[in-house]
Amino acid sequence: MARLAYPNIDRPELQPLVAEIIAARGSVLHLYRMLLHNPAIAEGWLRLLSAVRGGCSLPGALRELIIMRVAVLNGAPYEADQHRHIALAEGVSLGQLEALQGWENSVLFDPTQRAVLALTDAMTRHVQVADGVFNEARKWFDEAVVVEMVTTIAAYNMVSRVLEALQIHGDDRPGLLHDRKNQHV
Image 1: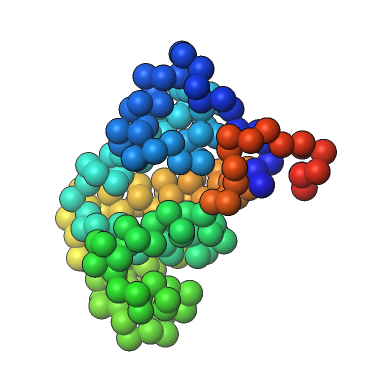
Image 2: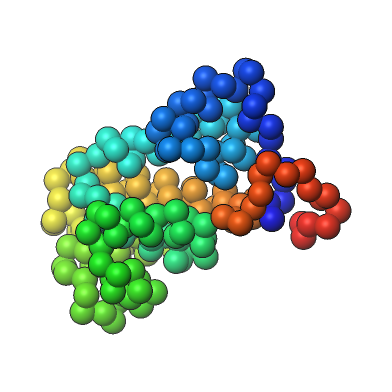
């Protein structure tokens, strides 16, 4: 259960943004519902993540490998649950998803994917990226795509950190009020 109560999204002043979130995501996912505590943050988040997911030339399968690897590294099951079907639809194989935990020892990833996963690991685990890791990723992509990759990795690290700090999970029941005394904080 989330550490904070989900806000009431039926408030009239939220309706234009709620409609925009639904148009972009199909529903008001738990994360967006929580972010609606501050509509400006929810709106900025929607713009940034929409650009990362839909405004880049980075191939969708690589984007989803990044997202799923960040979820693995950060222990963010809600994020993995949300993106598993997207990853499969984008061409990531079930075997690759299952091998992400130990991708370095798997034969299921080609050199381009390995370079992207190494960059994801470096940025997520250490923030600073060694020249060799960066240059390996750089050799496969032009500058615009490199910026898109780095931004995708950074954005989904932000996503998983917010999800986990607030303990937002898929089995939360946002429409129900809950007693915060019984929560683990």
